[in-house]
Length: 142
Ligand code: HEM
Image (cartoon, rainbow, N blue to C red; front, side):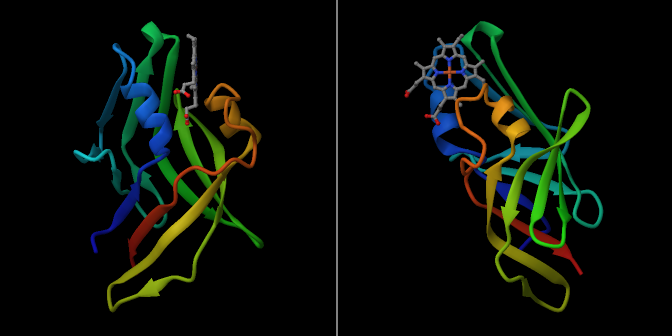
């Protein structure tokens, strides 16, 4: 296990974007993307991660940025915040599994994100609030 946030984001969205002739995705500034389109954001402090993922298609009419994810634990649920255009907002609530720990690491496998209204807007309202994104894995140093 390596510290970081690992996430397909939404495989059906990635397929939709890459299915378009001009569709592209980019990962930079601490984010990387694997050959099978799994994104990894590198650690940037407690439950903060860094990296910039962008999707572009429809000749620029579709432009989605998901940058610098951060997990905030609340009393009931956790919230996943991200930045778009430098503005941080709550993308999704997270149903967190029980953490697993080793001597040096703390890991949550399969945290389940459900879109907030703002998260729904990021995807043009195509996915309604409450819609599930793909589960994500979080590994942090303890
Ligand atoms: C230029 C205008 C647009 C057109 C003509 C268009 C067209 C479509 C079509 C036909 C589908 C269904 C595709 C399929 O089922 O394979 C779709 C799905 C979708 N579109 Fe667009 N779209 C446009 C703009 C946008 C924008 C700006 C966004 C913003 C993020 C967006 C987000 C989505 C999403 C999230 C889906 C669902 C993908 C999935 O999970 O299957 N679209 N769009």
